[in-house]
Each structure stands twice: as structure tokens, then as C-alpha cells.
Amino acid sequence: MIAANDDPSIENLSSIVFLADYGGKTILMTGDARGDYIIDGLKRANRFGADGIDLDVLKVQHHGSSHNNDGQFFHDVRARHYVISANGMYDNPDRATLDNIIGGRGYQSGYIIWLTNRGQPGSDLRQMLDTFMSKKECAGCERENATSGSVRGPRQGGVGTAFHRPIGQDL
Image (cartoon, rainbow, N blue to C red; front, top):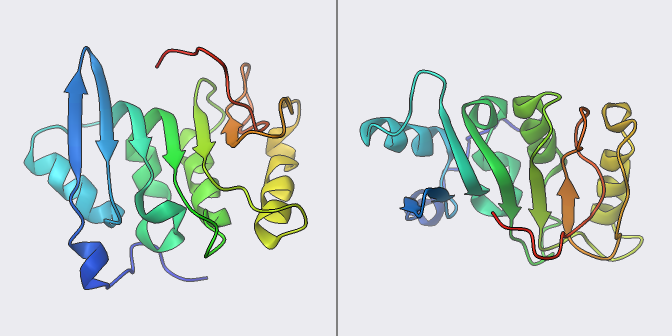
């Protein structure tokens, strides 16, 4: 297993990270930054409390690569919506990142993991996501519209559920 937060890339470590507040909503844009550096920045900006920070939207760093996050990051930086943007070139997101989000959230409900890439049918990424969705921690989860690109936290306990994009849902 590769250690988390081990990305030494100058380009990725130069990412611009910003926290936006508007209309009572918060979004944290992370670029390709490492989780430990993001938390350090939030602390220096006095936005990281004793229990971490709760956000409306977290754009998960580095396309969901496990090189830029760990379980502690998602325990401390919690969101209602996790957005993982990837184009499919490197089979991101990594399984460890999804496990870290769920590990950080435990059995809480009320969050959604949005994916822009879930792989082609039969691809390694699609197989990993299907396996991820069928984990025992997902028992009782719903599989809704399997053509869109999100993994939805369950309505009542458990972790992760189906690919589903609610229509007209406000943040």
C-alpha cells in the first residue's frame, strides 16, 4: 500500500486551494494539493475548529488519487457533497480514497459522492466501483439510476449507495 499524502510533485504541491462562502454555503476547492497541506492552510486561516470543518461541497483533491489524502483528512474535513472529477485516464478515483471518505464519515447518512468518471463497462474502475458498492457496509443501500455518476450516502445509516443524480436537488 502506498502511503497517503506522499505526492512530491512540484506541480501538484503548487495547486491553488480556496474556501468560498456564499449565501451561507461553503465550498472547498482543493486542486491537486495534499490533504495535510490543506488542513494546515485551513488552520492558518482560522477555519479549522477543534472538530475540523463541515462544508457543503468538497472538491476531492487530485481526482481522488490516494496519494493526496488519508482517512484522517476525511474525518476532519466533512462535506454534504464530495465531488471527484476525473477523465478516466488513470482509473481515478482510487478505491482507498472512497474507503477513506466512508471511514471518515462512519455510518452517517446525508452525504453524496459525485463522480464524473466511473469507467466503461468491464473496466477495472467500473469493477472496483461495483465491488465497492456491494461491500457489506453497504448492506441495505439502494441502487437507483445506474447511468449517472454519483455514489450516494444512504438515507438511513450504512455507507455509500448507488450511482444516482437527484434532479433539482439544492445544495
